[in-house]
Length: 169
Picture 1: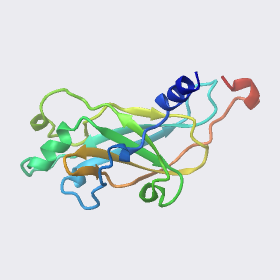
Picture 2: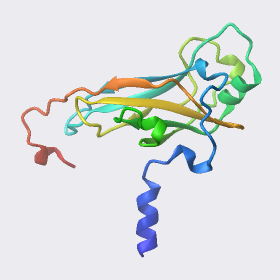
Picture 3: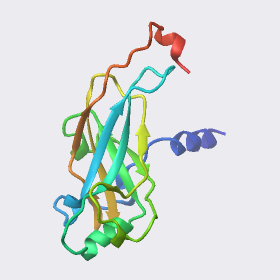
Picture 4: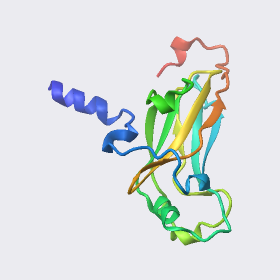
């Protein structure tokens, strides 16, 4: 019974990008073609804590697609790491969430600015008025390729005069 409860708790928890014990490649070729877009917002009531939509995009380049770029675009393991601690991404003080890759068309068809390579994902229950840092990680044969770190600030969401106890699910 305890094992089942333990398994159920971790099934819904964020996952760590280093589960596969693959290194994060600091200066990987192809990482400049990926951009993690963060769009913080206030969800509809009864929620009172801000959320953020993440979208991983492939930025167009006139250069032909090299093998590492094709491997990035074909990857089936994509994660978003989020932290409010400065330097938390480098230290592993972050939460990691899985993004589902899109499988529409071949990688050679992804040639326009801002073409999404993964489904958008929303992370909720963030703290209001806090600066967060995020990056995406894409798993390739040699390890995880990170995007540049994206910084965003969450809004302070109005609750229309309701007490927090009244709006909690």
